[in-house]
Length: 599
Image (cartoon, one colour):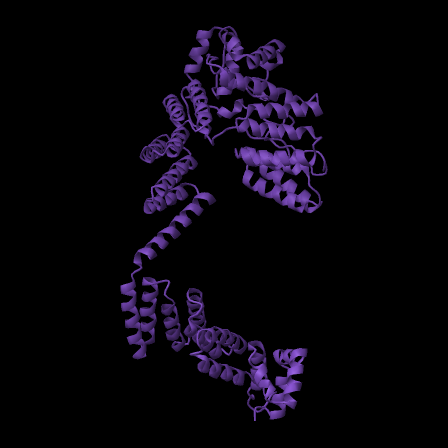
């Protein structure tokens, strides 16, 4: 099996285990390992993103799938599912139609079109369908009911199946059938998660039976949304084989939801459906930047059903509106209420994260850090971690800027000079460090601290300080000389001589006040580089020097060969050539190596 197939099988395994993040990682590795673009891998990764309700990424992968193989009908079902999740019903409809153009018998697309139609009607309708539109709006509903032990026997009746299909097509018009057919009541109870049995066909008896059961749990409101692949297996299906390289691996796609809602206990499921409908309307208004109207819908949703997702959404609208104090109050309420109803920790983490963002907008960095940290305690996400670290860096920068004081910096400089004179090198370093904090743009602080660090034999730190000083003031010659001194003490002769050559060029433009000191140190570095090693004869020294890569390079330079030849006949001519800085550098190197003798 190829590496791509191994990763693909691994992704399927993680998906079956509902570990969608690891599934995404595995499919990503499979895509990277594939020698040619594979539309199936993009389709499977799209399903994984959709399971995490990341509709944007799901759509991106689905579109890449259809781009790789425009003739593969199922790819357009992926596109349709992602568009549905984003609330783009018209785009979802177009994608399902494209699938049917390629595969007219595709049942997934046919059911999907019905779901889109029903969702569109529900969005545009002000009538009351008793919540059936959202509950029955699932393209795989018939299959699920046939496989559910509580409804499988009922669904063997063709007449009942026909009634379910009629409710799917027109929930409002067919809602009254619930009052006349107790089997439909069993179906709706199953969809709501209520364990109801109907020993008789008497509706009152049925109600009495249901009253004795445990408090029902709400179903995931997204169960009414279309699942883009009809051929996908149930979560209990066995792992697919990987030999079918051009057949899509069975992947169960998540349900289109705009928010990450968690399943919580709900004593009145119909209120949950109505709350989700209000939330969806609020989301649509939010996207249109009609924040006041969106807030009203989120309030309505919260009044109908206690799910802090609605409060988090309301805080987002208040934040975008610019009403930060109201957004803070809403987030605090979300945390408090979330604790009471035992909301999912991820939702509470979102409330804390939003509080951090609000305080960051208000330039209250301390509180921003506080709430970002609280969010990470509840649930760690890369985005919030990045915000926390960025805010902490900003606090440090502000603190550093607030500490800047030129007068205090001068006091620290004089204090450092006094310690240096007394040869108290540690306190000199400390004083110059204080000078740097008080005046971070003054190159002298770094250069002076480098001088003290050299005395403490901390040569690498001295070089770093000199580099900072040079970056602050490129014409500060003293920083070059101190850097060269540290390099010389580390026996980095080549680097030392390069630093001094740069210092010579800078100094010559500034009047040449330090040229003598620079040349003296340059010659010292060159002599130490080429001086005889203990026990070495002059002939051995010359032989070693002649093999030095830099000396060999200079001697092989045609221009230098001409200059040296001319100098042998007319030594005075060499002085004219020395006016060229580059030639002077090479000649001084040869003099230091003993190749050229000046006597």
